[in-house]
Image (cartoon, rainbow, N blue to C red):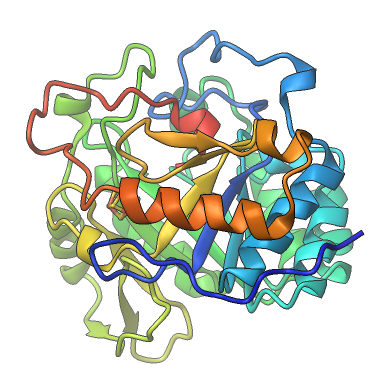
Length: 335
Ligand code: SF4
């Protein structure tokens, strides 16, 4: 049952309005991408320490009351979360204007239609390569054809699909033009993202893998004339372009080379009910314990407002010490 949401907006002390909640539904994933996860996976929490679907709905309702208009379900892999379709329907019925899911695409063939029927209109699918051997190497065993099958089925039902490409100098840098050609030809949006020093992710050397979006943009400019799109208020950190004659957006997200934290509008909720203020730091507040102790929605809203106001940092510190990985597991936070 939805609780009556408190009506007020969420702000931090740097003048930013927080209107975007990223919700990690599960720690589980069926891939082990080398920039995201250690090969053996991450330590897991006990089942009792995770939000139940009803508890999660209560928190979603509180955040909606705090002016959150954009929600994204992530993981781990959110399509492994057994109650995903119901959570999408719940968020849709709350009136979330921009509702999306980020997935590796493995289970889209089975779930895309149900997600669309629940109200999902936007989907982000990771696609770091179109070469099967490279895709398998980056994802530590992933099957490219399975993702492509899911993508083509999903586009029958979900109108906006964006391909997420994490830039890896030693892997997919040379493939950037082919990835753009694929997106343009198939009508998908595409965005290129700089890899970030988040937690331990196995054997990958971030220094060797890092490539800036400026280098990616220059590579695309050899074959395509990029035309800048005007910024929309809820665009987030991506710079967006198009190519004349095609509907696809081509976006670039540059957390390292061009810090965009000044326009940050987001916080993250983990599957254990922890509200994390910034992707680059591990600071956060446990919402599960007060929820189970019977705190009212108004009191939860007060707690969230006070914590975000006082504790959300101004920016990440990735660039202050490039040798130090932020002490978070990307696989838990959903990137
Ligand atoms: S790194 Fe932190 S402050 Fe910067 S945009 Fe991301 S969440 Fe916001």
